[in-house]
Length: 396
Ligand code: SF4
Image (cartoon, rainbow, N blue to C red; front, side, top):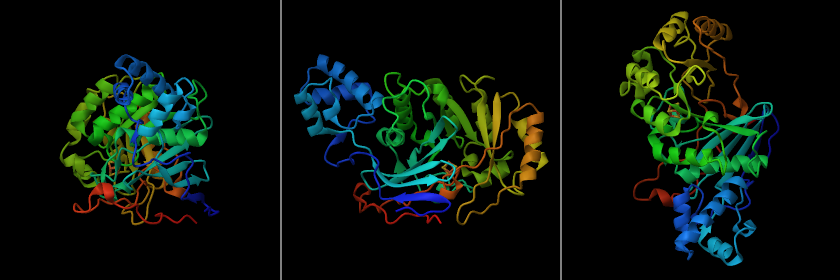
């Protein structure tokens, strides 16, 4: 179905060639050692399994193949044995929306019926895929639509990296191009707090960075956190990706209110963790995200306090005009207030771009993601929960 107007709205479609069957194990999201074990389990010797895993990796992540029959470097009986035991199918695309500005939003439905969204934000000749780490979120930031949805569950590595595969399928960017890619960057800024699902997120990011596969450089990957201070340093040391902090307030009182995680990890602890972030330099600055809320955090005094707060940290400040959603308790700051705030921060030596809202017409902008998924009652068992009903937002 397509509804003309602000955005294009396509529902119940699948761009992927096959949907994930429930009776076969997915090889997507496995690391190389796990792939080798999977191949050994269907009868290959340990030595051969290592080579086969390398070939499989290349087919899955370099060529984007989702059908074992197309893996021409593997012999026929092995291809058949793989197809009998395993799958490379993508999650179902429950809904795809295309904004008038080119932004695309996928609502993906996983095998247990739970759903999460990912968003591609195109620039002229490249763009960033914003991926989700969880279904729902525990953190309930007050300005965030996802925060109104209760935490349902973590996404596993397969579900996280599948978001990238689906987006690349959509743009037909296979085999993984070395240069000139449309989907050139990854931002872990979608639904959920990535550092509360660190192991799965780290595994997916390592797959994305592997040079024999998707080959997205760590310089093109950014992980955004609401402020899980104890894991920030580990993330830098182990993954070396860019760091973004959802800051949004310059006093603990206000941040406690806007972002309840601040009660556990207050500003001092958060900024201390940022100061220790491995690899943060002037060439590789930490991004502080700051949503502009009218009359709440947008005064000149707030701007000056912000500059003092981040002193000594190689940083840039992304100012985000608040993207409203149905029932949102805040309004966006007026344009002139945002400009005044940006000028103060800029004068202090920090880059302070005002982020152009993208995909507002399809609720794909920053802080607007949400799915219908709900935690199943314990007795029903989450894995058996039925797919949720009709799509959430009518686009007109
Ligand atoms: S801003 Fe991020 S951490 Fe906060 S509620 Fe939204 S998704 Fe969760």
